[in-house]
Length: 600
Image 1 (tube, rainbow, N blue to C red):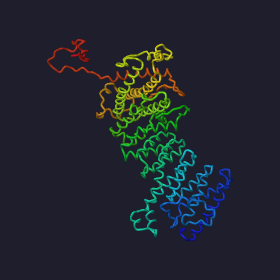
Image 2 (cartoon, rainbow, N blue to C red):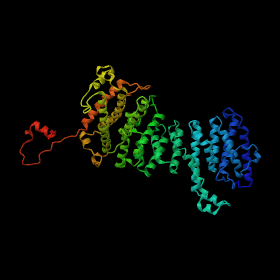
Image 3 (cartoon, helix red, strand yellow):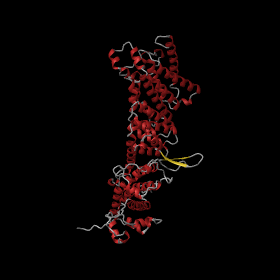
Image 4 (cartoon, rainbow, N blue to C red):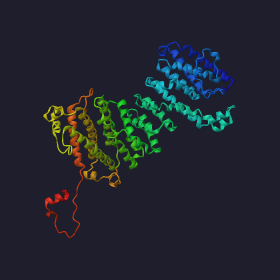
């Protein structure tokens, strides 16, 4: 009702000048308003709120920002008689004084000033460019800002995006353009009234990297409003879904904030319906992001012990039974992944690919004098253990799923595992042609209470062995140990026979009687490995290294025996043969099963 030149406009301007004058008078009283009187704090709060609302909802016909906004116009006007709505005079002066209060030390005043400034951003999108150049947006989203300021900044950006969306979709922008008297016909045809609509979104897109980093903030309220903002950005097409999906997967581990987890799941399901292959393609990056999230946000368990886990345990009321789930179970059930075999297998292959040599960091070519051994072990092995927990406890609905994982685990162990065995043999001076045929001296030493002091381990300390290279090989062997333990766990949990494992092919169709599979054993997967290097330095823990070496060799021998092809003797097909089976000589039987190949 306060149209230009009306009595209502004059009253609104007079009221605005009163609030502005009070802010002008108190801006230099103290840097921390929490030390001021309560009446002063209340009056400042009212003034900031009122001026923010006036700047947002009242617009003059001639208060249109130019294409190139002059940032020098934002200055505090000390002579309040010069304030007017025309040419954004009051709005520019309010923006300048809001900046003054944004620099105060107390969080409450900063939040109020930012909220008032948001009213100007919504009504005048080009001012967002000024705030970007002044560094206001970066400052309010940075780690240096308090939690309250970061939270308010996220809320303000959500309001800006929704206001712009409403303005465009409701036709208000077009109606405003048509009401202008000085608008040209060419601009009416080109629809240039929406030229400012993309400014705010474009500016926020430049800070997408910071938004992803904020998923690791410990404040659960910030994480929730961050996911809410990301949802609006995805819906409006302002950020890349391929970059966003891993962080949404990571937030599935936000177990203490179910609202955030539920909202992230909703966005994942929505993106999965639009782009079915995206979850499969980004699952490896999602596991890495989820691992970093758990390590930064939930690094300890309920007892305060260090722990990074991919498992969630819930107790069923009434029965008291504990149900174990992975962080990604909800995504698995809600999305279409569980219904499509090709997508499931692609997802499994992406996760198992973390264990492959070309994906993992190649430590064989690193300079052992300069490489960071501690970082390698801390970052790589716990990540693989995290991924193996997911593979061990996903809710499989067909026996072909664990069989597929066992199959590819065997392939990786057959290639990379045997290569590690050969490198161990070459380093220790053993037979490289058949490096793991039987138990060696180091395996015998591993069974003792103090392996490194035993005479069997003397070979490691005779000066001919490169200790750092042996430690590196033990780290690589630890990766294979996790994979071998996973293979054995899946085989025992689902009761898979060695015959079925040998017969399985990834290309075969699912058998009807193997669908709807369930676990025989509800025990938890334990893929833990010992630390090879000391926590504070690069010295090797020789007892742990010897035990790791022995465990790796034993598991590889067991795996080789399990993966050996099964030879089945075929019964005679000719009816004319009258020779009975029990008359066959034992030596001839052995020749039939394992024929000897002699040189020509």
